Each structure stands twice: as structure tokens, then as C-alpha cells.
Length: 262
Picture 1 (spheres, rainbow, N blue to C red):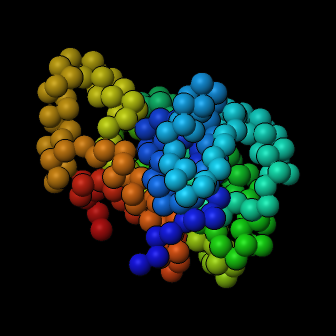
Picture 2 (picture 1 turned 45 degrees about the vertical axis):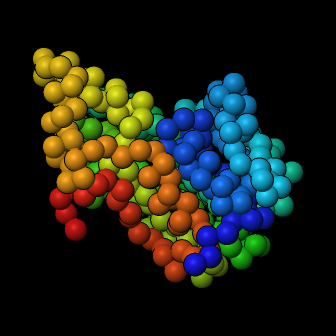
Picture 3 (picture 1 turned 60 degrees about the horizontal axis):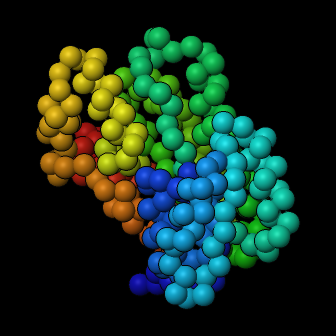
């Protein structure tokens, strides 16, 4: 099975913490040159130093804020003038704040739409010509299991994640002929800062302890534990490899079996 990413260039968004950082580390271990994209330069510099370079990889980073799609595109346009090719794009950014959908303000949907779908789309449009020229492309979107089964208390997130999944499937249908695949990884409950925030808010809302809230959530997972970011990263990294060339337009839950539908 060919898992070698030597001489491949990957652009990984939201890559200084959590799942995004774990993906960047995994891709580098498989031999890829990695470009990190996030807003905190100090964390970017630190993460670059943690990436494997034993195969001569050249890693770098871009500073941009996903809250401003125009800023992301400006930085990317300058960067792409220096790059001959991008083979792998990992779209990843933090999810919208929780809350009932009936309480959501219209601007919350608009902000989330820009941060997720619009950024994903403009990034993809920028790198697709390079992927076509290379005859190799992997667009991997880190979304959520809410694509298959909406999650309680995440009204805005459920809505936007579904839109991104539909966008990705449509793009997969159009790009397959060029040797470019588009797939979604759907993390379940994963030990990240976002999960900690969700647990804290849920415990506060229900007037119970954080420990009991965590125990309740774990009990819903057949694996009886939360995922580590590295486990989600492994699925994303596989989809980036030559071995996954015929996997296209799918949603891959990495959730320990929690999602109740097929």
C-alpha cells in the first residue's frame, strides 16, 4: 500500500493546535512538505519546529485569520506565486459557538458560512489549477458527525457543516476526472480545546459537575472514550495518500461508533 507523500506539498489550515496540528504532523511523517495556515505566528513557528524533516522536507507557514476570507485569499495569492504546486489541501477551522438554533441570530449563520464554506471554496479554487497541472490532488475537509446526525445544542454548526458536506460532494463529482479527490473527515468527540469548552458549557447549563458530564458523554460512545487528535489525523492522512486514489466524495466518521445512522 502506497502511503508515501515524498515530494508532495500540503497546505493545512488551523494547524497550530488540535486536529489540524495532528494532521500536519502526520503528513510530514509520511514525507510531505507542509505549509501551515493559522493566525498566531508564535504557535506557527513552534509547530513548524515539531514537523518531521528527515526526508528533506521544507516546511513553512502563512499567517491569516479565517474570520476574514479576504485576508486569507490575499495571503494565499502572494504565497502561491512562489509555489509551483499544491497537492493536498486540508480545510479545517474551529466550529461555531453552540446554542439552540431558535436562538441563533442571522449574523451567526453568515459569519459561520464565511469562516467555513467561503474559506474552503476560495482556498480550493486557488489550488485546483495547481492540482490539475500535477495530475494529483486531495482536498480533505474536517467537518463533524453532525453531517450525518445533527447534534443537540449546535444549531448553527449543524446547519453550516451540512452545507460544507454538500459543497464537497458536488466538487468531488466535478474534479474526479482530473485525479483530484474531495472527501470529508467527520470527527466525533475528540480531546481538543473545543471539546473541553463544550463539556464546561454543558455542565454549567445543567448544573452538574464537569466529570459527570464527561462520563455521560463517554457512555454514548461504543468505544467508551473520546478520540485523540492523532486518531482523526490518521484518517485524514490516509485520504491524502496515493493509496486512497479511488476514494472520492465520501464522509468518513471517526467517532468510536457514536453516530447512530449508517
